[in-house]
Length: 300
Image (cartoon, rainbow, N blue to C red; front, side, top):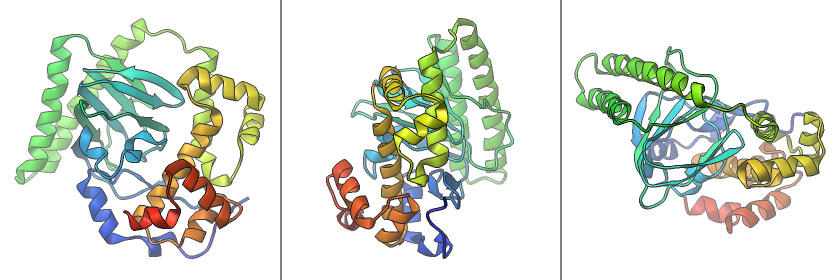
């Protein structure tokens, strides 16, 4: 059942918040879609230092979310954990992680983390992978090649020269070729995903499509043909988090995004995310963030 309808949500947009988001390197984030899931905010090709992505709050990188455009994370220093499509892995230096549009993910960014995020933008015509890939690049040659390609994209975007954006997209095309080649190399050593990993990936894909519906873990489990207990056990096994935690994290991320970057009334944020009442939404939000929705909005 559609839980939220009415005046177009564009009337609640906050132009100043949008500018702040662009300054942080965001803009491939999500905005509420008409039937669940997310709709892209206008986005262009951008190259952003990974630490800057957390400048507006660690929740902006750690909480479960998806983007409407492809993303490549190139970590050059530090280590942490990243969850993509319900699977958690450790990452370290010289890890390249490609995340297609609509794939739920979140990751740690520590004080020693360095790297670059390449947001491909919504107008790319590249032939990119349709599945996520976590590539551990061990050879110096491919490491230097990827860093050089990203530097070339950034240099053109910063140059202000005629045709700079077109030139940047040509370099991005070479980056796409690099990615294709490294994926093929990785496939030769890859093992077939275990049944638990496949179920976790199916769950997060379904969750990403329907997280606005107000459904609970039991309803998702039934749709997947398993029991809630089994689904929770699988999620704990694949990413160290329960099915319920993944669900709540995704919903509250979207709530924080709407509260910080639109003027939508809190009661309508609650409705848009499938909560049965604004009071229940407030309790759930405060439990996850330590702040009421109104206090969070004032602080952002």
